[in-house]
Image (cartoon, rainbow, N blue to C red; front, side, top):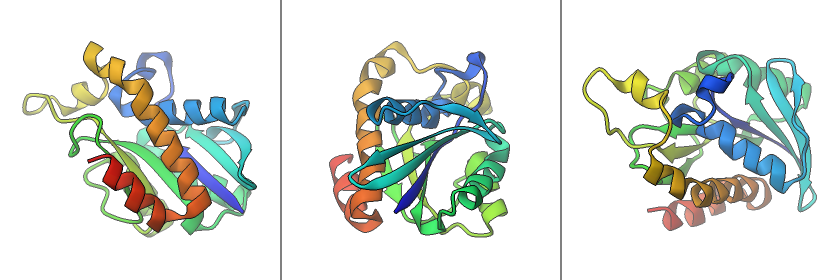
Length: 189
């Protein structure tokens, strides 16, 4: 059983610790937990690890957020991973900071990375884990907000939240989306 876990973000040191890059941070944590070396690949930095008899392909697209679908499609095809075994990890402005939510499908919610994935895959029926980053910004300042680093208080909470997100991703691959959503969404209210 193979699973593709894609963390969304933007490449480059200027984006490293920004809210928009939480997907990359979760993938980095997973890579460490599974002792995976991430390497440059086509359209993404990837690594393959094993957990409870399953293979996890970890991916951080190098296409920038707005073209994430190209990397998702390429690595689904390359590794022969069906859509139901794909999980996309992304930031979400509609959720308060620290709220984690997993869904089996849904709208893009105005998120350009999810919008592109939906366009490229031709469906919104893929699993996604949303990491709440809150919406503490003035009207018209959304771009600056998502591309700025987390606050000091948020940074203190990040390690536990990233760990919980990584555990949710592994659970997705081991017990399935329904059971994971029941446990994960209940524990993160």
